[in-house]
Image 1 (spheres, rainbow, N blue to C red):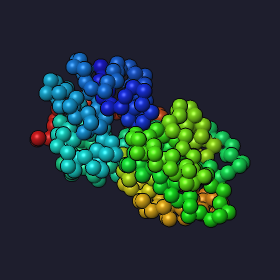
Image 2 (cartoon, helix red, strand yellow):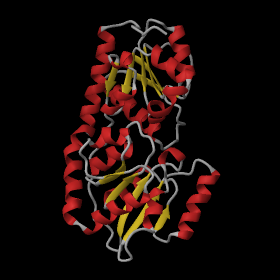
Image 3 (cartoon, one colour):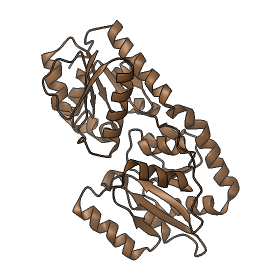
Image 4 (cartoon, helix red, strand yellow):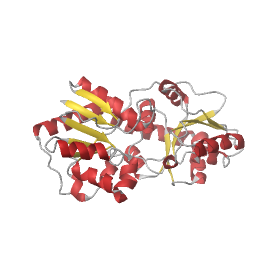
Length: 325
């Protein structure tokens, strides 16, 4: 099939949407499909559109559905879609109705959708290639935070937790990710001046980010909302334990019984878990074991098979089958 893969992320962006689009295009091409990645639909004649982001890709979704009402349309829901936009934004809600199939990136995403839409929704976990664990730094207990500096990521929660650790702690936080506003950049620089154990590296090449992840002791995912974090996939692939905010998207990735959750926005609770992981070997091994149990979810062959099954389903059963608008 000729597929138009729509992502609002710019071609050189290093965010989750662009990573997903690039990886899916590679997998779909290996299955024999022709894939064009576009920020906005150019008006070509694809046999299928896959659009990431119900709100930000809404214009492309609506134009394609109007132009080719009998051709399949897949809408992939991001964290801001699931946990904010579909509740209040008309264009995002319209995208849900126009879609032949919806995709969520972890199983708890289904619970955020109206019951009438769940039957046309599929769960596809994102994947990451295996990452060889590296020798940790001997000079410190390095923890990594990886993600762009924007409010949805609650990016400075780990920095705030540093001041609550015991004086004997060797923890240092390495933060990777570009600032999406001047205000966020100023705040990151202020944190580095205030807290010498916090280091912000800005945006770095992907190979460098994975290198830092591979040597780190922990990954902190402090987000307020996540659709299915790429950084959790990478941590599971590298065998690096995760400490995460207890939000639906993180629970969908790590499981209900995962022992490394803290209350959203609570740096004291986060500091307690960091300190426990640093000082209590048994707890750290429990985090490692729980992550190892979830690692098969993010195998590339699993994600590729799920994409192949989705395309086959749409090919066998052509037509829109949309819910009533």
